[in-house]
Image (cartoon, rainbow, N blue to C red; front, side):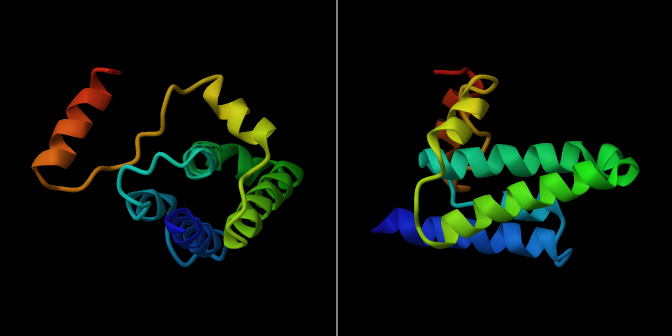
Length: 120
């Protein structure tokens, strides 16, 4: 199944972020192009929040530990090829209609990006 390989790929990206081998921006740029997998979209948003909370993570060790554990749980679930819990997926849907995962750099990818920008 294609989603299992995509999920394992994303799991590896998250693991590299947690080990400080790559930065979040490089990880999200390496997500599977145009993925519609709800678990991958939720993982994308979790990484974006991880990066956005960097200042808070530096000030609050407990918050840092909880956020690291949360990403590790997402990583481990995706590594097994499993769906993320529905409450995690739904928690991001509350704020985002979709994930801003890059599309391929070709004509169809540009068309998809254009319609995503229009929220269609």
